[in-house]
Image (tube, rainbow, N blue to C red; front, side, top):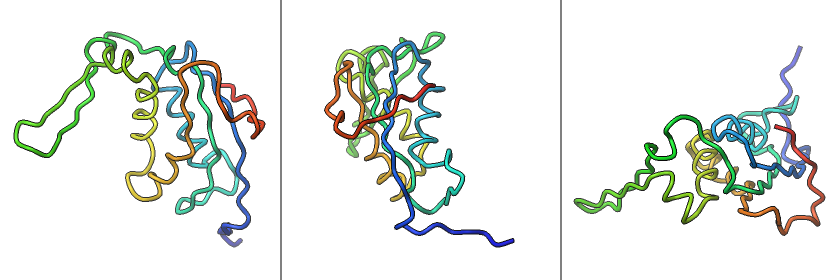
Length: 142
């Protein structure tokens, strides 16, 4: 039995629409990362970008469990001495709620050039309106 490696011309990409309202952040992000990566397809090839496009709406209504709303922090560093910046989940939710989902999914993708290209297939929006209706996205049940 041969192992079949799929070619770039044989990859078919679909569009999915996921509603984040009432979903738990980690469980929802892991399902989205699987679809972006293409692991739900029977002909998955690890070194290729063969995942689908995902549109997420209602990103501001994502839930977290426990005390994460106040205790979870997002860390960044400017590169200069003393350039540490930390923001709580509550402050990020006020400023850019779509960044919460983007950051969670980004951490579940490969940390290389492939992961960065896969992340461009994720579209996150705060409200229920999105500009991708022309692609006819299918509803994703999570």
